[in-house]
Image (tube, rainbow, N blue to C red; front, side, top):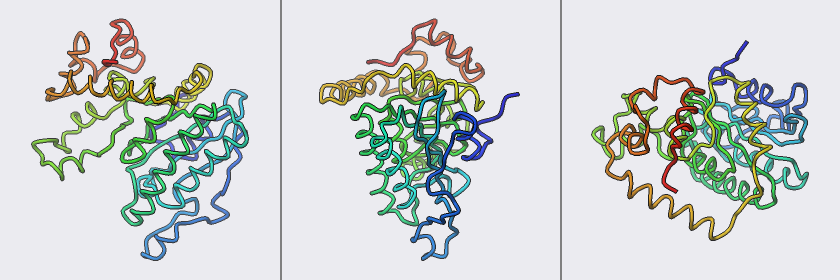
Length: 298
């Protein structure tokens, strides 16, 4: 029987993705490592500060893993939350783990502790790159209701591999933020179909921001993470690789910069019936994309 990744809690997800009985949590709720900033503002705290970290096994290989809890402040990052992620990544390097699995669900940085949160996210980015530079792959899973936005959206794209479901979303700015800054004419956050066409897993897969799309099933995410860990190659963190990424983004803007809707982009990429994409199941969608050899300009 399948179990929805979207509907699961962070703890349920991390236990389902890793090998049964292998997860050993670091800084569990019993240690009550909480944000000092939230308490000073009389805001609710969580005894794990909204993120679960620890060591476990994935198909027998020793990995480090973290899962953000979208049910606590939308998975937003604060000082302690970010420090736990940084510590996990640094521990992965010390222990020479086979990989790091990040189950991300977050709206970005907490406004309650914005400066500390922003610094924390920048430290997470650096830790991800240092982990990759040490030869340890970082794999990101995105399939929660809150998506992966803000600075953590950048963190996700710093990883070796991003795995998403159609229900997952990945972007820098959230729909409401774009609408507030530029008006409803620029982006209508109430148009949920438009929101998912723009930030959802299928669009991210088609333009190359996501390497695999899976169904909303914890077992599917686990299988994809196992495959990604086995297939990922040695990291290429070089100036040439960075310049190639920048050139790819330049070509993307040149090719799609005038598109009014993601479906215009899909048509440009060669999707035979762009209007049918939202109705396709994950496997059928992936088969269609591969059959037509659809890739973003690179």
